[in-house]
Image (cartoon, rainbow, N blue to C red; front, side, top):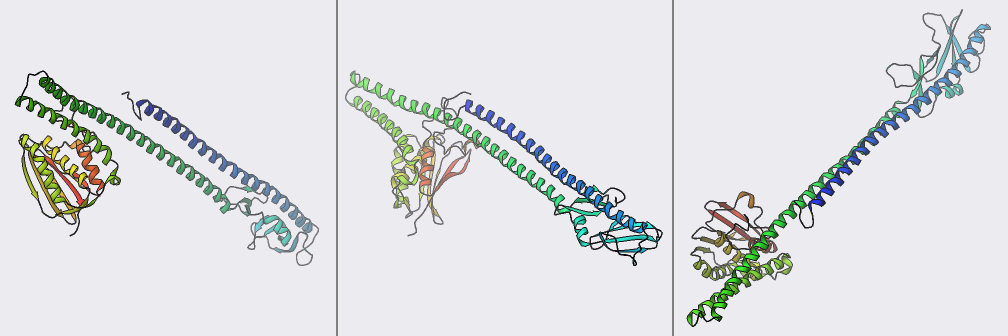
Length: 442
């Protein structure tokens, strides 16, 4: 459907294409960031593992040098307790060889003890603090620990010291994974936010498109109604005046023709007035001049003014108005709202119409109910009947006169008075409209 208006189908297609492109770009960005963060995690881990392997080679060199000094002392016949420990050891001891004599092990103080086998048994050297600090303290990221199959990956010290390994500290290794997860979570959150934003934009665009389509339909119906409402009285007035001017009617007949023409003029004036009222009261409370007034009197006056039309339509009025009901209202605007409700009841009532009017108090609110005996409001129209220019059905097949502004005006006026109007009930037996405004305590 191609149309003119604020939002066209072409605009919607362009917007959808833009959304699809943005969505494809967003998907590519998510995949790219996932891969990038995975690569970053791999690079950071490889850096740590490379540093651990380099430190493992350095530790092996230090341990080999120290153990060689210990073996040389043993081969030269030095004995613990009798000879001083060779550098870099500050002490040494021997024990009978019973079982394994590990080349190196970590002691309880975090240092490394080196051992060699000899005729004396197992000779163990205890390294000094400076050497231990140089070999065992590997900085904030790495640590020297016992080799364990379940431990964090790292660099195992070469034989014969393969019982030791250099690995990243648990906090550092897990920190890399936590930062990776944090980046992924941030990326997923941002992607989700943009995805939701795109969905919201699509929904708003679709809603705007549907609203514009509905407004176009209402405007089309309005133009058809106004054209019909203008052409009928104009044609009638033209025929009437031509009859009088041509002399085919004179005396009392001419008077009747002129009065009929005057009624058509009043009808046209009423149409123009309703359009002007729709423009005025759509601006809300700012155009009102509310003051304390008797709603009872306003309703009675509106019903009395409506009596002539009701009589012409053969309508039966049933009016129940409680006395002394007051509210702070703009009398002109409220009279228009009441008249529109009565006019609506006549238009859409049964044949003959029956109109019920009731004004009462409920709590601190004044309530006006106007009932008709029509066929009721269809379910699909109930939320639309208060819209501007809305008329149920199609304008070309509808027999009821109107412009679709009556109930719209009632809603605008009610809202400007901090009140409400709604369909209280509807069905095959008729419809009840309920207008509620804050009342005044007296």
